[in-house]
Image (cartoon, rainbow, N blue to C red):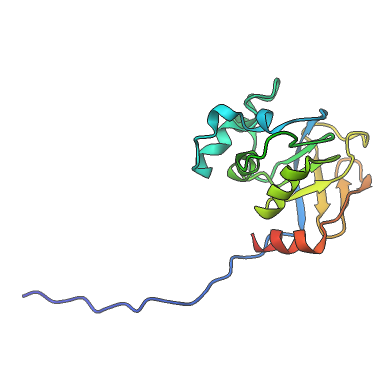
Length: 176
């Protein structure tokens, strides 16, 4: 005889994801270059890709010397670069490709304004600081407080002051 299974009640309990960390630590990719535009970050030939899980493989594919980035980057890595990062056309994929790879933080001397706003709106951590003159070497590890802007170069103990996240950016980041 057929015996119906008991009904399971659906849970309407709202679960808030854990808040993102306020202190980020990771291995750095030192890219001592200014004016890295969105076409170098995520080339326009890949704009038809809408699945974030697929976007990461094309990150920096059009930036000479970093074509291997997507294959060797690890979750939690931190990118450190120069002025005007993300200049050029507004494309969300240029932010989402880093989220796809689970990059922990992007630090630049300055950002293209639209890129910065897209990153903040997406909850992707971006910080302004000048680390290119700090003696930091590619592959070293740093610890960054997003709330205070303090950046510690773990190999030397040198501390550099970056721009802390403003309250609105911090709130968006913490909520993902």
